[in-house]
Length: 244
Ligand code: SAH
Image (cartoon, rainbow, N blue to C red; front, top):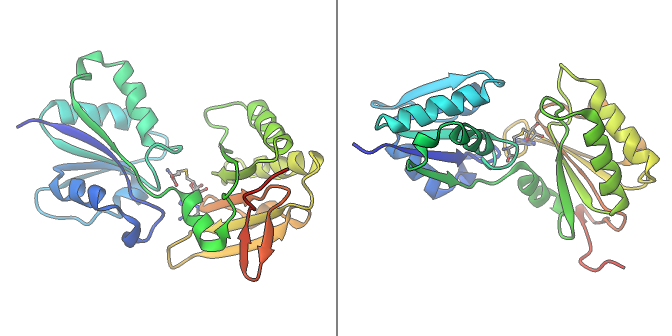
């Protein structure tokens, strides 16, 4: 048997947003690996081994996946959303760099609907003009770098999607991020707080940055800050396609 490793995105939550390609890979898998809440989204069946692991075990999990594939297993590594967006695909390639003997393995990255696209679709078209995405987790990068990117993104007038805005272990970072954007003159911009989109717990709050409070976000929230031209039309929000 020849092994393979598919690094797959499960989308933001709703099973209707799992691509047919990902469903087919899961149907053929012998082993599924990932962070426990994501593995829990994969239905158990005979012949499928589920390997759930802790949040911070990415590199170890990636090595294990390569090893299983090298031993002939059909492995699927699952992430939420898209596997290439602040998720497992980069960790697998980091592990591959350290294991050149695995270079010839059959490895595929299967895209998924990333959170910011699911959120944008819910509220209208806030990413209809130029935008950027910033991960606010400072596990793997210094706060100074996050702050610099926020400042420059504000100056460039991008709409900004913020992933991992807030966690119990670093509750103050998001507060500081909002301050950086206010100091950069973005107080009037619209801010979308989108919580657990496409799940039964979905909730979306929209306020101006001036009125935004850090407590409006947690780890299941994606935040989109509009650009200076982002506007409302009825219940929708969009970024006009023309900029001056
Ligand atoms: N690979 C994922 C992102 C993982 S980082 C993707 O492409 O979507 C985890 C962060 O993604 C969360 O802190 C949150 O900011 C965002 N996120 C993931 N699923 C979400 C959902 N259903 N609703 C809102 N935000 C979500």
